[in-house]
Amino acid sequence: MMIEKYEAFIFDLDGTIYLGDKIIPNAGDTVNYLRKAGKQILFVSNKTTGRSEDYFNLLNAFGVQLNLNEIITATTVLKNYLQRYYYGKKFFAIGEEIFIKEIAEAGLFYTDNPANVDVLLVTLDTTLNYNKLEIAARALEKGAKFYAANIDDTCPVENGEVMDAGATISALEKRTHRKLEKHFGKPSQYMIEEIKTKLKTECGKVLLCGDRMETDITMGLLLGADTALVSTGVKFYSNGSNIKPTYFLKSVFDLIKNRI
Image 1 (cartoon, rainbow, N blue to C red):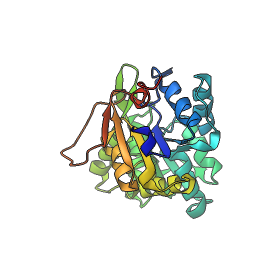
Image 2 (image 1 turned 60 degrees about the vertical axis):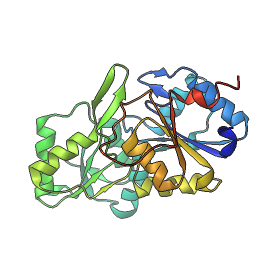
Image 3 (image 1 turned 90 degrees about the vertical axis):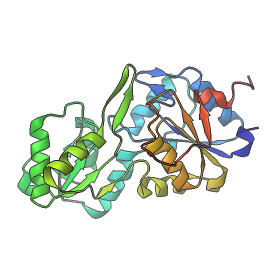
C-alpha cells in the first residue's frame, strides 16, 4: 500500500493542509493517522505572512498533532542565511510588517533609503504599491543584493489566488535589468538542506505532498523524494516542464481514506 512505502511525509501548508483560515476537509485526520502509524511528519511553507508559531497555533486549533520544530518556513531559512552573512547590514523588503520584523530579529536594520540598502528582499506583500517598487528598483540600481524569500507566482486563498513574490520579482527584473540572485523557499537548495537536517530517513523513503508543480513537486524531485500533487490549492501549471508527480491526489485525505 502507498503509505507503507514511506517513513516520512512532508506537507506543504497553504493549499495542502489548510486554505485561508479553514482546514481542508480531513487533512488533520490524515496527518494524525500518519503520526500514529509512526511516520515522521514535516511541514514546509513558502508563506511569509506569519511566524512558525502562528502556523503551529493555527494547525493546533484545527486538531492537528504537531511540534513547533516540525515547521520549516522560507522566512526561517532566509533569516539563518542573513544572520550568518549580513549581520548588521541594512535591508529593504517588499513584504509585510511581520516579515520585516522577523528579518530585523536576525540582526539587520531596515531602511527605505535606496542609497543605504545592502540587500533587497522580496516576498508576498498584500500592501504592495508603486512607491515600494520604486524604492526597491533604485536600491538595485545602486548595487543592493537581490534576494527573495520565495518565488511563487501566486498564493492560494479561499476564493482563488492572489499575486505573490514571483510577479514582483519579474517586474523588478524588467525595470532594472537585474536578475534575482538567490531565493530561500521551495525549491531552493537552501530549503532542501534545511529539510535534510531534520529528516530521520533517507530521501527515497519520503513522500512530499503539495499543490504546486514549480515549487513543491520540483523540490521533491531535487530532494530525491516521491511526490503527490493535490488539487486543493493552486491550479496545475506545468509551464511546459517534463516534471511529473509520482501521484495525483484530490487531497491529502486520499492517502488514508480507504483505511478509516
